Length: 93
Image (cartoon, rainbow, N blue to C red; front, top):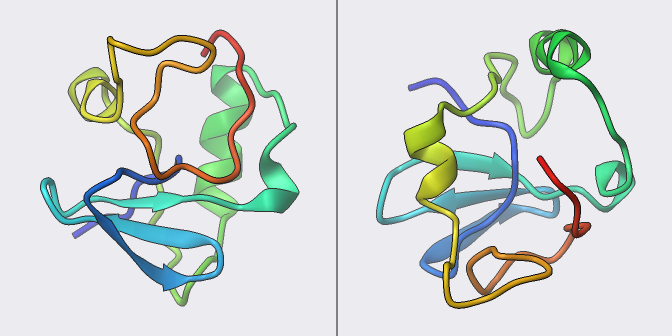
């Protein structure tokens, strides 16, 4: 299974200080304090994922739209993300 770059879901478990696994989807998300304010365009984000080595994994990639939607909480705003995320910045992604 390929790891996914991003963050955490409320139905997740801590794997390491910077990585969480979503038990409902099986996806692994980055949740790193060091990267919470970094902004990248699509091309830069793809390179970041390709070069990322985190939690013993080196097969990181950007999530697709369905995977991203799995972490959205439409009842919240600023940010509209499910509870449990620690290192997020409210921004248009």
